[in-house]
Image 1 (tube, helix red, strand yellow):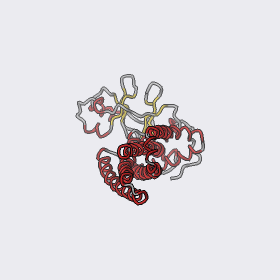
Image 2 (image 1 turned 180 degrees about the vertical axis):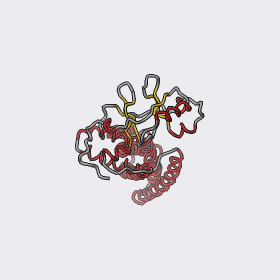
Image 3 (image 1 turned 90 degrees about the vertical axis):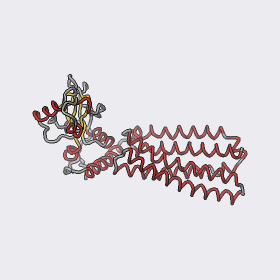
Image 4 (image 1 turned 90 degrees about the horizontal axis):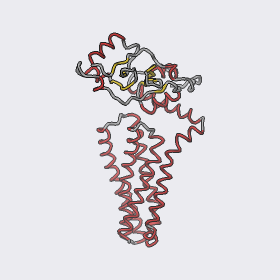
Amino acid sequence: MELSGAADFNALALEYARKDFPLLQAGASVEKALETIRREGIGERVIYFYAVDERGRLVGVVPTRRLLTAAPATALREIMVPRVIALPAEATVLEACEFFVLYKLLAFPVVDAERHVIGVVDADVFMQSVLQTEEATGEGARYDFFEELGFHLAQVRDASPWRVFRYRFPWLLATVAAGTACALLAGAFEVTLARSLVIAFFLTMVLGLNESVSTQSMSVTIQALRSARPTWRWFRVAFRRELVTALLLGLACGGLVAAIVWLWRSDARAAGVIGGSIALSLVTACLFGLGVPSLLHWLKLDPKIAAGPVTLALADFFALLFYFTSAWIALG
């Protein structure tokens, strides 16, 4: 897929919106809604049906499967999804592209200031009109569309340093906050560090291992989210797999570091503290690497930008918490 150099990302997305779509009354029954669809037609293409109130304001989206399988007397309000993601009438093509990449939906209604639906922008229209590519069909092709569109949007964002700053800086505040919390935590265990210098010697290794493991887990999860729709079943399977992997990594790394400490310092207690805290913290690092990107994806936030700072911040803080607490309990 090639992005045309002539594409105007500052143009109104409404210029590419379709107008041949039916609107359904939220208070009507399924039977009445189907009569409306048969009477008005569905135009060239309908992905979602949108429900409006008595004043014509958008109040919900009706999935086609629910509409076709519900009892005829069922009111649309009972089967519609009230949370509708809509584009404002003044939205640009660039903003519409960002919506496609962020929410992974195949169409968005365009609404005016009073929430009246004035158009519908769908993915195939963008593939043909904006990106100037042939229409693709199938779920895999549309995921390719989302990924390719995201790549080109990154190029567009790169043209504006201020846009990149606004997009990335808020997430780096998580790193600043975690660094401050870690500094305060270290200060709280200052006496423990002073009594056992070997704990301070391996502090960098503890943090390095946790960041490496959490980054590995996070990268694998983000890659999986690009090709799979996350469900509770998917998350349970991924959680069990990651938990077993985390335990193996924790035992291997913790045991190796404990052996290094014992051979170097001949201090069994310090070796146990350092090895044990590394094993425990690596387990949490793996789970953060899975959980944070999955949560961000579920919240419709970009895990490629947001997951790194948040995951590493949590992994570092809990690694130090386990490390210092273990040292305080075992070594005084």
